[in-house]
Length: 192
Image (cartoon, rainbow, N blue to C red; front, side, top):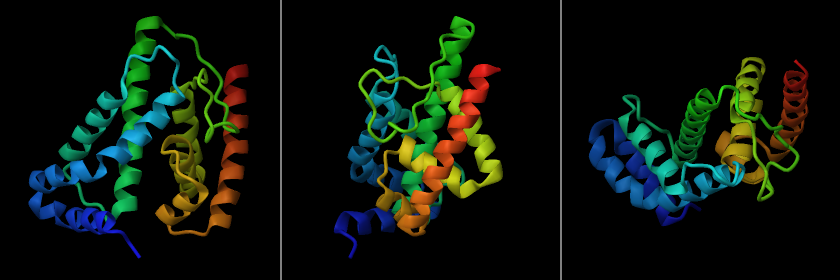
């Protein structure tokens, strides 16, 4: 049975197409802490001297979500998937800008095995991961969504299954395949 917060979030999301900015303003206090947790998980995987702070990442993602003309999410899980994807885009844009300043700046390998338990000094090359994830989505969109939810949003197997409306066994299978596929893709890029 959904909690009252989940019910409130879902009812506000249903109002969005008509209520627009007023509904988004009511939504923010209900989702802020969870968005902040997602942002912290993202930034935890970044280099220690990352210039983007958790609050800035949440605020930028939230502003982008507010500006969307097609801001119509089916439910809470759909909204959080969109928020995680938006945060990923913000971080990738930030990395692209930083790399442009540094002319190829030091790329580091992505450790997908440790993705759900990131080490304090772990850093990922988000640009390379994003490019590989786009290629995976062309092959199998669901597997790419599993990676987004597990790696970027920090979802558990159960949460990812619920968000995608598939079984936990399917998420586990997709996660194993996607990690192996991405590991191969990213190691091929390192050798290129």
